[in-house]
Length: 239
Picture 1 (cartoon, rainbow, N blue to C red):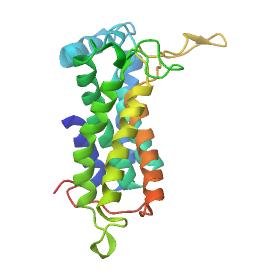
Picture 2 (picture 1 turned 135 degrees about the vertical axis):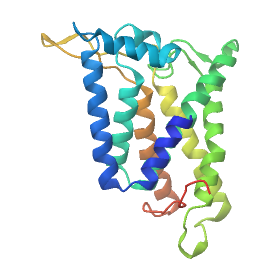
Picture 3 (picture 1 turned 90 degrees about the vertical axis):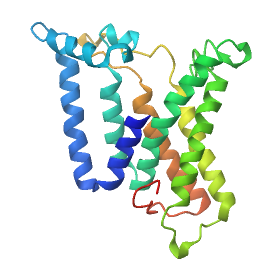
Picture 4 (picture 1 turned 180 degrees about the vertical axis):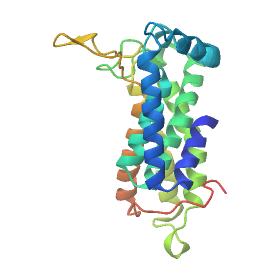
């Protein structure tokens, strides 16, 4: 969570013209590492990755699939590129909070049968749970409320007042948690070959999906509430 909020903070304080190129370099370097770590002579990369991340690696990541780091950096980069700064910062933050929160509540409520979505609903939510989704959404609410309360509103007044603030804070959390819910477990992996050409082991990852969907949802929420897409958040986001 702290790692994700750190990047949301970086995106907020670093000018867009510098943040996106910097993230592009970091994403490219991570992709290079992912492509090379299982090649002959580069096994030390994989050993180093296991040493640093250890138990944080998921089963499919240890078996040769790309780690979440690449998808996280790629997702942050694309979110910053696609959306206005406030929407992108909030989108990145939803991933930081909704993903671990939904996972926590999902693990602790997996014994509650009605909450589980074993086979998925049309592929959505496979092996996840409704209670995990709700927990993730609610955990995002306090952060969103605080950030939007401290934003620099024109005239000092929030359009729609406190009611709009509550709606936006909750809707953003729901968007982030829904995006996390929509990504099935285990991950959907691309075929080894496409038209006879071998392709890297890309898969659908929540670290990529959540910030982009949340950033998009933020622009729609702001639009429906009549809020400016260029709304300036607080100098330090939270205080």
